[in-house]
Length: 453
Image 1: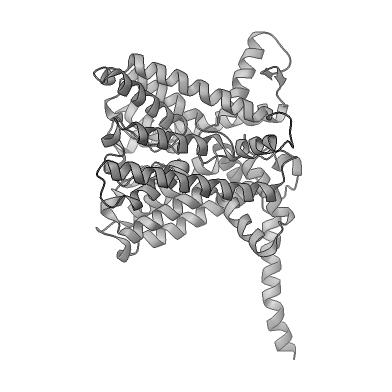
Image 2: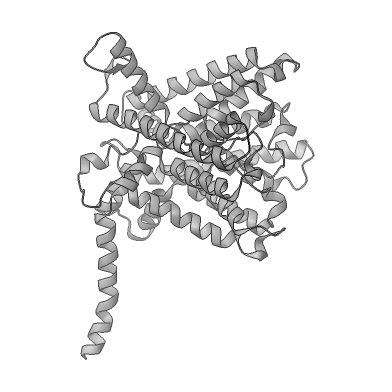
């Protein structure tokens, strides 16, 4: 009897320990561990010979798995020629997992089974998306799933027609793959030169751009807009207004600079030149990482523009990376207030809370420290020009995926450095730092809600 009772109690004790670990571990660490688990599973699957069309090393399989989960798009081997259809399916699944996010997937499964979220999961979900207090995490997660699959389905249907009209063989799979890759701002492509063959096809440029912008601007905007349309709010929230204005401003200025100052686009017809300028600006700003123009031929001045766009990146609660548009807004407000001698930091006539200011400045400081450390190591290990390595590093940290062509030639150590940077970029630069530095004893609800901007 004693043995039977003990054997029954063991699973309960194990479950209690797991639950205790989940409730006491800092949300930043939970997010990091969650994404690492996805990466390890993807690595194991992509390392299976049955999924490989050509022999792929364990390191390259790890690199591709990390790039997919982090929705970066940097590749050391060509996915289409290196993996079978099954391998491509695994990559697409990892992209979808990474785009939706670790907490979104887990919480949706819990909601499906239990129809409720526990305190710890609600706490971590709010931290992952930086949800305002008036948005219920349960309703938010359901809205994210509905919106994601609706947009990806419509995008796949449009891309199917585009690819079919442009002579792509078996257009259904490329349409589905590129629709999910675009919305999740992953930038993975089944074509060896990304989308350069479609530079003059307006329908593809528009479709990919719309998918990428919707993914990058964030699910918070979707929920906020829907609540406003339903009459539950009279006006769009302040965060939504900031994200929209900053995103549109970056797209407009970047497009103008490319159109006017990029020599390699000067010979294109004006309409195609404008479309290409916008697409490359959009690709960097949303961190989607597709290209319709060769990145390796860009002028140094325009590389600086790309650096800035990739560093800022997308918006909070979206599928893209970078420091986020809201962090840029806070930092701009800080500079303006300092120059005008004001005691309070304001942006769009609204006072910026001290916690947001601390997060934005800490994120920038940690970003620059990580960038400097990675560049130091890469300059020691890689035989490439400074600007090429800088582009690769910023692209990895912002989960952008654009490259000047060095990714496949990186040394083993260089690849591992980029793997770390892509992981940090997906978790969030500041959240990654918190996960490495924070103990598991904090249960401060207010602090949890201020993890990311």
